[in-house]
Image (cartoon, rainbow, N blue to C red; front, side):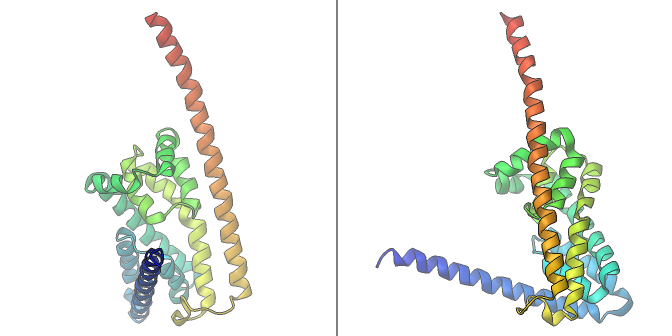
Length: 238
């Protein structure tokens, strides 16, 4: 009977986590509904909302989908891009100057981020662009984590433009829902939405493969360059 206790505890924690996520999701939908009724200032309010949730580690997928419902594909994409860029830049600066120890503790045991740091030292802008294309890397944590690397702010911002394809697809998916009440609801997906979802998955897979290959190539090149220097140093000492 005793082994049942940890299992029940895990189930309880999972249920609590789902409840909290559901509550957060419903609050975001309510906020989007409120923004939808603001008229001319709705775009400004949406950008501020996106900035806040990005800095606060709140998952932004519901809000990105909601942009498609409220503003349509074109305006929604532009607003999400502006909000995400502002939020990502703010989180980067916080990670670099205000919360270095906390961020370092979150990524200390992540080989993925250590490999990224090594690669960014050589090809910062390109690596960040590829990372932003891939959903395999958590957007919010990555904003802070990249603040600990040696990448300049300019290269970080330019590389973050890689969020555009995923942003367009998520906003497009939201536009197919038709109304905010459908956000997070179950049911059969629209055929167009299913096509867009598969396109997003394929782009994410290709971007992840590109990141892996690119980082591996850079690491091998760095190793080849380092070995001769070490050998030359050893020869001079002898």
